[in-house]
Length: 98
Image (cartoon, rainbow, N blue to C red):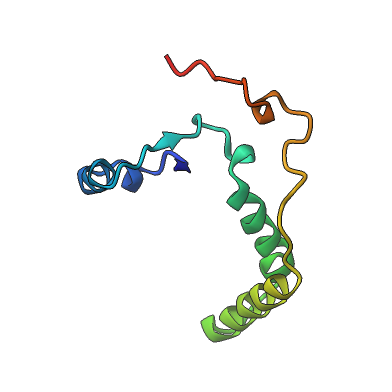
């Protein structure tokens, strides 16, 4: 499983569960949020639902976020062109994890 370096991901309980379920954790390099696909979604959420707004209540802000997520889910499609031409997409690529 590929994930970021959030400290919760490195907790003892998480490591024990992964060991028990034969799951290997692979952490993204520090300061490489651009390679974490979910960051693109958060950026879009901020841009379309939060930037330049002045919500009068948490409920109003929640409605804006919920509306964006509903729209995004209705228009979602598989990501097929991520890292096109990148060496990491070649089967013989093995990063130096030493």
